Length: 219
Length: 79
Image 1 (cartoon, chains in turn red, brown):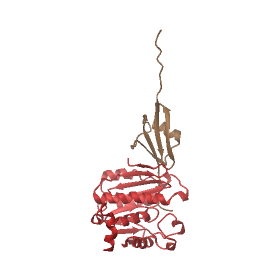
Image 2 (cartoon, one colour):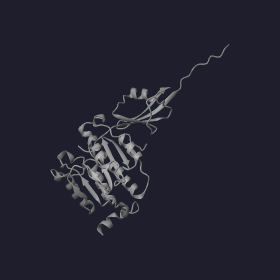
Image 3 (cartoon, chains in turn green, brown):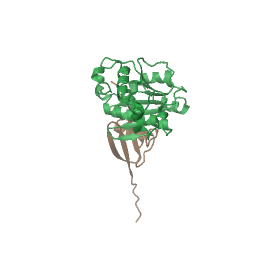
Image 4 (cartoon, helix red, strand yellow):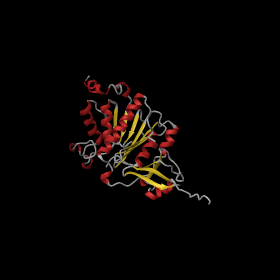
């Protein structure tokens, strides 16, 4: 009952019944921690958090974690934070995703192209149990978001053209790799995609968003 | 007295949005190809480029009012 009351503000946007699809968030750092907060607040209650990292001091300024979380597994700390915010506790999985067979929406917030490629080839590509795969990337003030149906050949072909090597990526100073407001912005776009999926609205396959020039493009 | 016809070159104005950096309007004489523009502004393989939202060849001839989007290839998610 308490959760229902908390979700009333979202009812005009999307029915909680439409948000029953499980959501797996891979990587709970600069993208994943804020995304988890956004979709949990939206009313997605079947959340699974996957990451094998622990919270470090340098994560505190640009991720959702508190100083008191330093040293803890990220997924355990994040699960506790989200429960405090929403009343629902996501399932934490302290591991590195490899050959899992996911059922539900998968959101990637990993920190390198090599990890992203590994995730795609081993656990996402052509998997009919994943109706929507969201891959968020951020650097400095720029975000990219890909929304892919892994069983759709056209989506697969387009997405694989975006899997460039880490060496081809634009170099960024460490302090610009994950800026807190860019993480919030990307999390908002991802939550919006989850809502659109739940309500059957069209979803853009590719979005570029730049806070520097205030440009949002869905080619 | 004969009529002298002067060849008048027209100019194209192209809006270049370099994500993470800024927005510039380039005015150049025609013809202007995408490759020429990218060379002039120093775009390399660490960037994706779209013209009016579409991926086009470097030989594509830019027209007045075209918008060129330059997007860095980014990989990150956390520190």
